[in-house]
Amino acid sequence: MEQNFLCKNFYRLEYEKMVILDDEEYDKVWDMVYDRFNFNPSVDKKEIAFKFKEPYIVYDISYHYENLEKIEGFVDWGFKKEIRDKITEIFLKCTKENEELYALDWQHSCFRYNPRIKDEPKIIEVKDEHYWGGGYTAYFPTYCPNGDYYFFIDVNFHFGYLGHPWQQKVWIYGKKLIEEFKKADLEGFKLIEEKN
Image (cartoon, rainbow, N blue to C red; front, side, top):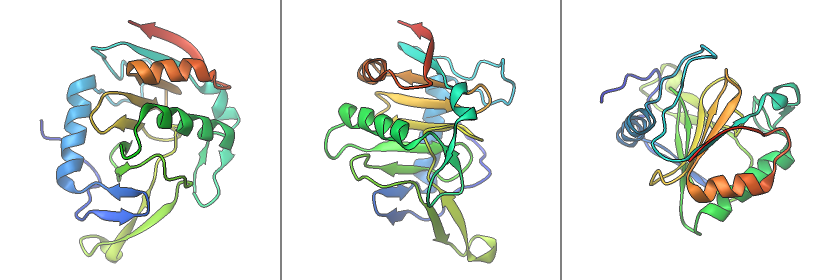
């Protein structure tokens, strides 16, 4: 399935713990997201955004939209540090040492990264002559979908965390990831749906 995106990357960029996806990997990953989850992006809060074939849970995270904090070194607001750290720990429990995740920001730069290399999100200036001004700014997404769809998915699509900004919800799939989120009992994450 061919998808048209507003922003595509022409070169792979290695940046500490992350790689910005090149066009080929970017298109492949988004085709999988659209096909696997029947992804239906919409600003309509009542529109069904995802259809899962596997078990999943849904958290209402609206509490956090009144309690966001500025993330140092980043132009955006996100979950408080203690929540971000707990979510990272959950991903660490679900991955082995060299396993990577995709960090996807719908219609923007997307990344493949190792969650074990601790670092706060950063603004990344990418030099690329294909862009006016000789480059663009790439933003590593936060766990809080605060303006766009932010997804964190295992590179083999065995589990994932899919955030919806307008519904202020997060969908979690994958047995181990579901178990770890339930055990973590994160502040402001209200379990509202569970499908087996």
